[in-house]
Length: 151
Image 1 (cartoon, rainbow, N blue to C red):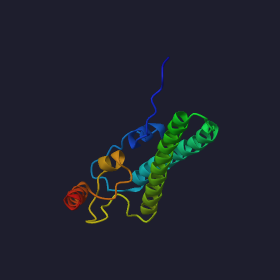
Image 2: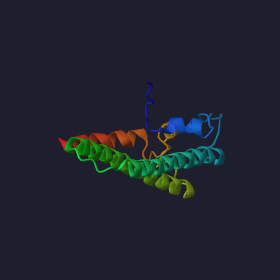
Image 3: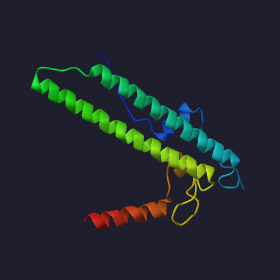
């Protein structure tokens, strides 16, 4: 019996789902021009639709699977599965929130620029992580600060 592995759709999978290929930057092309904005907007909107589908599907699955089991071990296993599903759903809601915030940055023409130093984040980084708010240098510094504080 073959089982299918479930996996979280990454932004790279979303590129193919949206029918897009990685953006090819032309020589002397202006950063975050209209074509690039359309490219990323389509990625973000497709990603949001896919995550919303997963949330809706999980709601129905949880409703269908809820059975009052008499055996305490079976009940505990069922509750643990529900807890995992709820954590996944929470993570999906957080992703949707980030996507919505990113779409607002697209509309306000601040998308693609670091929220701290305001330099270009870069096309490849944004394709790998469309919700990126910081350039790689600022993100690295933020992670180092977080490590130092948590020690």
